[in-house]
Image: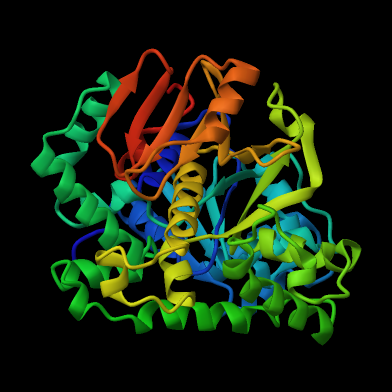
Length: 441
């Protein structure tokens, strides 16, 4: 089976080679490939490793419930796993660590007393567990790393189209047009990505059928969504909260089409109030099932300081999942028969890609009707990004923003080719090249 290349692998290597290494905790939604990539990392980068799944190793969970000191627990742990984890070039991977709050707390002991031990932790709904922890989390003693679905660059690599990547990056960096035939080819690959999204199992299936969307197994994403709904009964205050979480999640595709350009609780329940849904939103964010974009009152540094707390958008964490929830046919996506929701899909896709590149999500809206889809902070300052789903790129909103705030330049993402308009200071980026946008833009 061909190994799926993930860019997070480089960050795992940096952690391994760090002199002040701490226990590593990998966070991310279910099915993004956390266990897979850590197992591959352990096999390839360490002479010795041990994988402990706490769903299966209830004996280890019970060990950490015992009323004995940390040193005794540590010695017994080594006996139970029968591997000398202090041996050079050895790694301990604890999967499903959310099953033991006490073991999570003990990561402080590992960090302070046995920092020669390389330990990686991951788990399902681990973010929710930590958010609602009733135990002492070892703040400052654990390194946290977020993992997301595969971005479009990773999709190209998995599809055997990695030779396109240097060409895309070159056109992006130099603002030169891609050869038309290649441009249209990659736009078709982008549409296929909209169908599969970035969930590894979904991407693997699309690759296995040689990108023939008619043979793609749509049940993969449906099953992932079903597993998400089952998860919504876990780590909740009560059944009422679980129901609110599911209703809120189901409302997101509709919410993204709001003319108000913000999330509205009244779309869930006409009598709903924001204060009644604070814990629900916390749960969805902590589970990594949604990506939250904040509206800012002023596009100044730091953007987080100008957030309007009650004005935000929620995107689904994967564009393939969005299209599955919307029940769109493959033909509708490939033939652009999506009408009004085409813009929603493109914006959700861009949000996912920006998050993969380490950006927090912000947007700006004037008191009138002008709106800029995303704001990112780069070496060139705050840069506005406008997303267009097609090649019609006229935009009153972006013109208003440029005139009012005078950024160094703006980015317009669409189906148009690469380029730069010097008079308007607009950098044109095709939808398939969003993975090139980084803080050094």
